[in-house]
Image 1 (cartoon, rainbow, N blue to C red):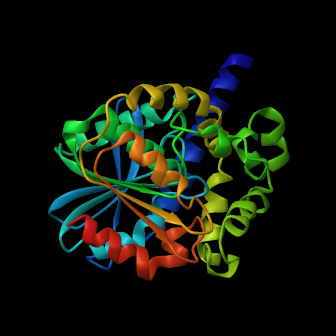
Image 2 (cartoon, rainbow, N blue to C red; image 1 turned 180 degrees about the horizontal axis):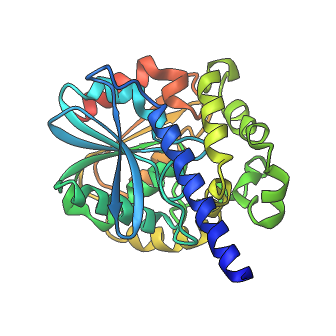
Length: 310
């Protein structure tokens, strides 16, 4: 009887979580606007992947970072949609995508995205990633170089490349090592308080960082059952990511690579790393910007990405 109850309760929680995720997905954009990104799901490799899609034409994949979801890309999607088929998935365990127990290396997350792309009948794509998303984007290009025409990396770092531990072990970046049972207990019910550290402290000016509406949305999304654990697993996988990326770097990428960093954030670090793993790199340090490039410097960053992705 106890086992039957436990099974039924677990199934109830799974359904409740899925329903909550669906509500969040549907709340992202109004369906009335034909140019607005549409919320969709795909069953791929035993996972249910949520993604936003807009436009027609040359395909572009947009990969979000930590504390955010596919929602972060909506302003760029609107600009790209007239000439591109734009796809922005929620990464493994985040947003409205299903939550596996393990598998949070960036190589595995990249394989999720590649499987999604294949399920949509696509092969050659252009890939853009911000924060954790840039690590997934690099892992995608390194594992499937023939399928990537261009790649853009936006403000963070590449584990396992060059002097990566100078970033990983920085005292101010303690969150890279903040995961596990105790951190989960400390953050539960205080998700927004925890995320304010990222949104405020990593911005050049916190008043030009993530909007209030987006803060509420992201905090609620990560507060759903299992979501914060999944987010923490992303950091817990960094040492394996470093080993994977060190191997990937032995074969430099040849496709055009754009690297955008904030002057008050990654600065030259990511650009220097990119030149260790690719042969055709354009690096741009965005003046007076912090980590949140789209939000802090959209008028500079969005046109640059649109131009690069043509």
